[in-house]
Amino acid sequence: MMYKIYEVKIPESSSYTKYISDVDYSDAYKVRLKNLELSIEEIYNNVFSYVPSWIMRLMVFRNKIVSIFGLKTDTVLNDKKSLKVGERFGIFKIYSIEENEIIAGDDDKHLDFRVSVLKKDEELIVSTLVHYNNIFGKVYMTLIKPFHKLVIKVMIKNAVKKERI
Image (cartoon, rainbow, N blue to C red; front, side, top):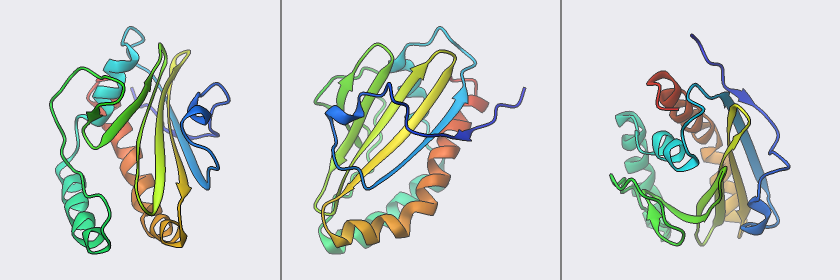
């Protein structure tokens, strides 16, 4: 069965506003969940733990470029299965774990971002919210936006295709 990923508005039920304000860029994608029994932690883990090799190579390339500007270059993906608020899971810091939503992200010189992974009814909605800290944040986001959109859709599609969510 084919599952389509749809671009949608950020859900009003998301608690992201507690963790980032003054959002300059946002996007959200939804997909119908195959396995409704999974917890939000399992869904988060299944979306972000399995990164295709071409995405990792893209991240390595990105890190070489942005390191010149003193930006964070984390690409460590761990096999840690448990999520804890305040700790890192892969490249993201976990800000909140609620029954149906996880908020993760990071802050850097150029921008702050949050990712919301929300289980709502029979759907998964993954939202990205970005605040630019300076003009470089806006320029950076303009340059990576096409890659970001592709990568997040591939990560979601990969999780669905492999029947992880």
